[in-house]
Length: 257
Image 1: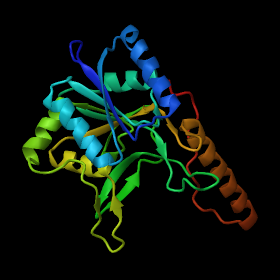
Image 2 (image 1 turned 90 degrees about the horizontal axis):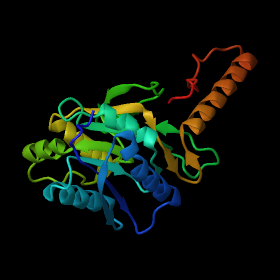
Image 3 (image 1 turned 120 degrees about the horizontal axis):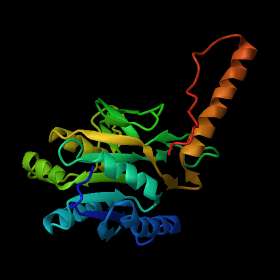
Image 4 (image 1 turned 180 degrees about the vertical axis):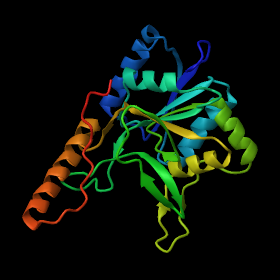
């Protein structure tokens, strides 16, 4: 749990515009936080069109100017809620859990009629291969390797240790992979791989769920509905063919908090 005297800043990067739902969520959480025993004392915004440079600039400004003990990263298309912040706040600890991610959903087929949703939390398999944390455990604080920066809470000690281990390197430098397909590796994956090199374990709270505003809201409700329908389709195929495929993941749709 974040200490009673610790300070927390909220930081985000955008291209000059933000989703209205993002602004609404940010304002609502800032106003509600004190009544829930949480204090947000600063906000930091970096506008531009080069996300890796924006993130590095925000991180350096926050850390070098000693703005707060903790930094909560929120992407400008995420809808922050007091429930999600509460869970991260109480899961984080400067010594045992200095880096804790929330969970939102992404899709590799954003142009499709129906986007196939997966949690933006991963295990690193090496050689530029990652695996989604899917099926998503329910209301757990779990160890993981990688995540996005859509909802991520970090302590100052994370930067201190990373600078000590990687003094001349950018933490967010995007790059192409070394494999045969030369797969692109984004700035968030790069950061968490370097954080791991510095000896810091990333954790994710699977109950700290937030909406991701794309063509429509990618949230847990859509995630559960999509995979429930896939389950029903698979059952129908099994009945028609008489062959069992081993089944698909059927999400637990119980209320999560």
